[in-house]
Length: 167
Picture 1 (cartoon, helix red, strand yellow):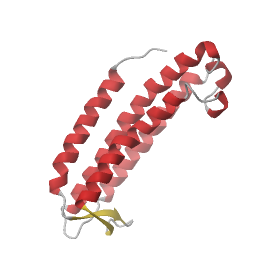
Picture 2 (tube, rainbow, N blue to C red):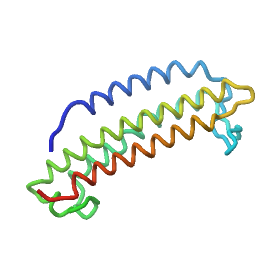
Picture 3 (cartoon, rainbow, N blue to C red):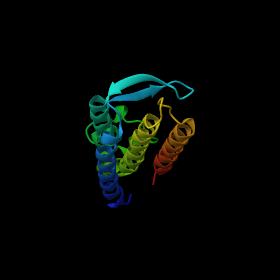
Picture 4 (tube, one colour):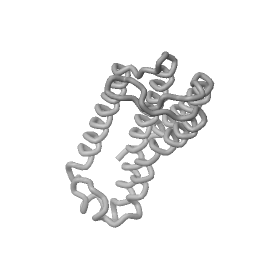
């Protein structure tokens, strides 16, 4: 199981981009921000600009790292709490450290995907609130959610591919 520094480095770059976009987008939002929309894209939930910015910052920083932390926890969790194919083989004492390292490394890719997803949410909120009345673009939302679902499916398939066979 090889490891590289690319996913963590990419995650740092994406976090810096997210933070820059987050800082730039705050002043672009109105005092009262439409943050929830019905299926037609019409606003039906609101927050103050400051509440929205705090929420997006916290969500944008923590959501991407959730899977990384869960994968890191595989080092310490009992084997029956970890759901991977051939669990007994991959979590045997002689392979557990290497397996956990792979899971953490692989989770950085998901974190990169999640930062992109959160950035896309922030972008769609900014775009929606620049219209009067605020209106969420369903095409942007469908593309964003679709990319996130496809990316997540690819990430999960790669994970299962790694652990499907014992070496």
